[in-house]
Image (tube, rainbow, N blue to C red; front, side, top):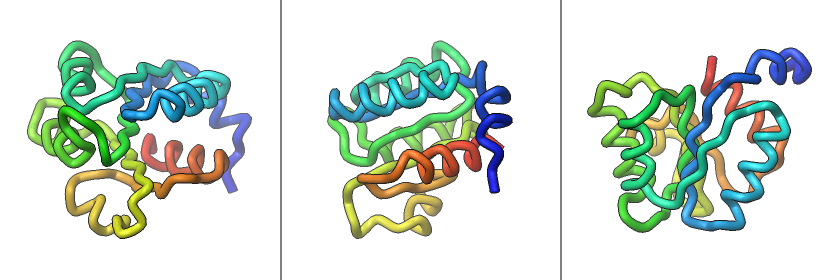
Length: 130
């Protein structure tokens, strides 16, 4: 069982790149993560996300699969073939046919189907960071 108080204190300085085409999803996840002590950098597409990654170091990337201008698999490929290849990546998607095995095949550290519970989201994020 994860001690969330300990996690909150430990993750106070963790920088999260959050990539989702949905403005509503970005807002909800950003607000939730910021309330948990994470420093969140939201963006709406893979191309913009990779430009941010090249400009600064992130502790973890959370990316949706379906996005314009570079989907989640494209972004994962770019990250894994760059000097940032060790960055943990949590892939999220509404597509029910996507599996954890497929996500890991493409280079994701973890995978989560939307919609998801905040507790499961935090557990997978913590797991991705460690």
